[in-house]
Length: 422
Image (cartoon, rainbow, N blue to C red):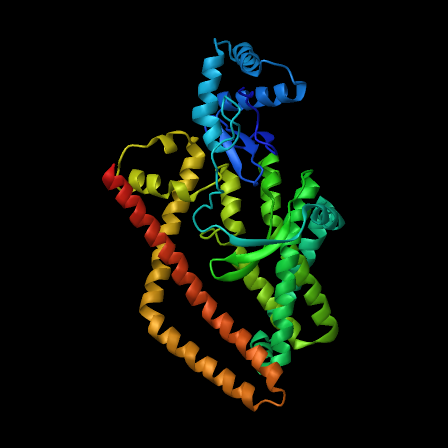
């Protein structure tokens, strides 16, 4: 005996994507694996009707859903129409079962281009909720104005009165100072993620788990802020900027401590926080700057528009369906982002190819000097640990840039092959 169709267990309805850059705002549902699925209005009505039937436990479900759709849309729907939508549209997305109640096919989570991979959750959602509540008050407007004003004042004092070059040289010659700076940089990264979670809680939505993993080749922390899609544009951008804002607060604390003690490793740690903030605001990779642009225009995945924008702007071909689905001003912003992204990646590739021999030679010489100094140090174990960390920091940028550009080239080649076959 066949069963009635249902939503996949754990599926959650989110609702309309507020501040959308699409001409017809999509409706959102959240799969049990955390993947957000965008649905057109009709399919979302089917899902919502199914959800209501599941809660009321009335049968037969197919006829009830068809009647509900007919009443909401003013069009005639039958149980056969609903079965078609379930079997051909919703079940393949992993949102519902098939019309006969059989489970949908496996729907592995799709990682977008240059996405964060190899995640390991460290703090569950319940702990993140509690911790983010401790800091959510920092997003009150008065607190933010005072904190950012103090940060600007600290920056002016720092850059106009302190010798950062001498401090950097002093720290690099001391293994214990290097380890302290690395520890403070890691703490700043962790506090950065707390900022994303606290911004979500201040906006009224639950942040997800916090953890760590690998972004390209760099070790990194992450916070699941999928629920920020429930917020409007301003709330999503606040969640995007929350990490950099907390970096500023962390740096402000270090400035105050340095002003009180004059301890030079703190000055170098402040510089590392600044570098993290600059990196996070870059819109080329999937750092915070990328998500700020994405949420500003209301388009979740900007990279999938690289090909259509290049064909439209550079090759002067007609707009494809993906571009036609966008509103005018988001399309202009995305086009500007693409036209900035491609030259930036090309310049980075050119710099890497031209200077790679010199960079590798310089890194090798620096690594050799670090190892020799570690062997001759009074505390070889501590010095060797610091030397290995510095060598790793020297190698990661080159490896990461090479991997980014390699993925970009492979993606372009695959896209060109698909279009040639088509």
